[in-house]
Image 1: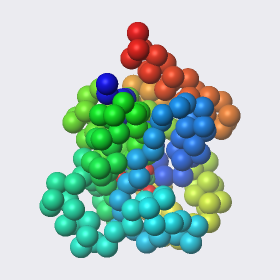
Image 2: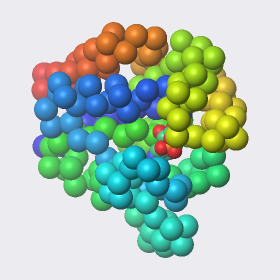
Image 3: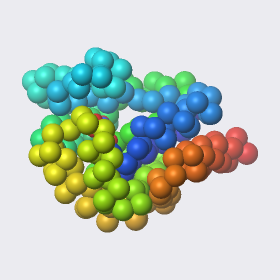
Image 4: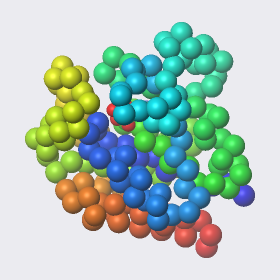
Length: 189
Ligand code: 5GP
């Protein structure tokens, strides 16, 4: 038996993490893959929990060893999905969820066309800016870079099969949960 891969994408600060946490609380056997990154750890984060934090050399070594399903450079740092976080779980019948940027989502779709891609959109770019500022974890320069990337991601996101607008977290979380449930039901039919 093989599990289903869900890819949740959308601009930085849109609330992907919160919506995924809500969906995971509702849907059994939905496991979040921990990505690897070279970006510095934030004070609230822990090694191996939010990310596998790697040095640039270690990231490159693993890349050359074929350990990534996809990898990108985002706002000056590298991020990638480790095969070890995804492949065995899917083979064992668990469902896996990835929280990644738009180019990464496209690459996953190319490699694993059965994946379910979901784009989370903000109500508008001003809302995204307020969230990034409110989060208090990014420097003004980093926020400016993330907003610039967000504008192009928003254009690309309209092509996704599923788009959820995160204007109300309760409603958006139940939409994501229902979408996942429907995809899993379809599977067992
Ligand atoms: P942050 O620095 O805020 O944790 O993440 C920055 C962006 O990188 C977010 O949009 C996040 O979803 C994305 N991201 C995190 N991990 C991965 C990954 O493994 N692959 C790709 N392509 N993007 C990732």
